[in-house]
Length: 348
Image (cartoon, rainbow, N blue to C red; front, side, top):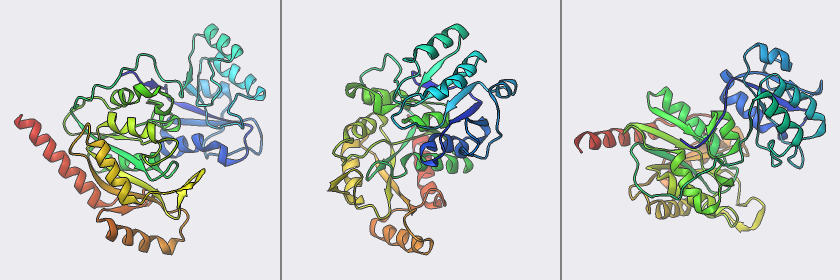
């Protein structure tokens, strides 16, 4: 499969960043893949603490770390000069360097020269692999669930990760498929969909969720929003190429307008469902919504149950906060789809 692949285990590099806002990638890795994170490295004494062991480059190499992941984003998205000595030391120790910053590692002359000399990789996760084809639109074996949003940054990645975890715990044959830089770092492979040339987005999505066994679920991380004035294109391409059998709409309670586009009110969830079905049916006529995931961080704790119950009564679908629990009704619905699909495959 032509996707970006990373080499665990990891050392999370936090640079000289002190504001947790700029360390979401590192925090996501520590939360969702703690077994692959052997340690953290900060350049300042009062830097961010992810709760991982503090390791030097030498200690990390001795303990079997294979990749140093830049878990922070500097303002401007580049590689600060203050980071270079540590990154060069890591390369010389044989560690791969992984980053999702706008200024690519490969374009940095000192880093690229050092990597060539050491025979190790610099992995820019926001650079798509070569040779992505135009989508075929042909139906693939296996089952797929896509997270879609009422806006950007409403929890599509976290919902997909939480769903994968709950499905695996319930005995499903399921796998998270990352379509963004942080998701790729968390899962160790994936496709940076928002960096793919428009004509090839659906083809990239086909590569991301290839044919599989009839009972296998790919839980695909969504991007953008179908009703977004700036990012609907990537959402459309990912939807058509993923060919999801099921989708979950992700929403943030209390958000009323497209973030950063305040002249555009959020479309109602029912409209997002309707549009997703209409577009998704082009490549999968049986697509259907199975639930609503809600980021409830803006609500008081005592407001959350009533909010979810009212939304569930309005839409007739399981409504949940993915960081609290995945409802059994949603898992039962996916299990029924699994049984139906495998039975059809067995008789065909």
